[in-house]
Length: 118
Image (cartoon, rainbow, N blue to C red; front, side, top):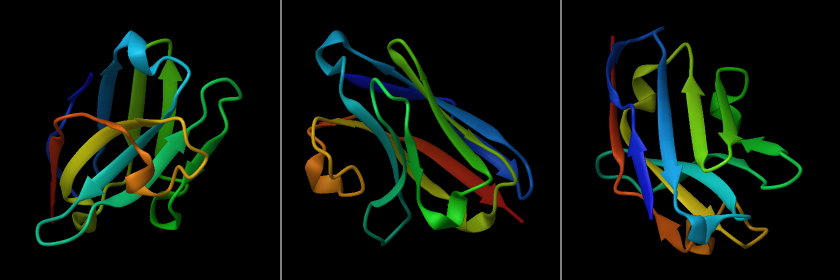
């Protein structure tokens, strides 16, 4: 199981940090963060590989978001947030190399709401 925490409301330009507590079953999996805005499909935000620590980001968040992992915890530090970042953020785990594709992920958290207001 994956359990997210840390969502909330913040003014544009502010910061939030999301946390994801992963169960032992997902140990060794690549971990990803996706977001889903109202009426839109779930989209890739960031991913981190289990052993190398290599990270990947969608272009719109590069330089502002940082994904990291510490044992069974995965974090998404979000700085300089923009209103278009509003949505539900999901933590996910996959054994696939296709870490930008939501269908590649077999484990999902319940989601954490992030609202950025201008």
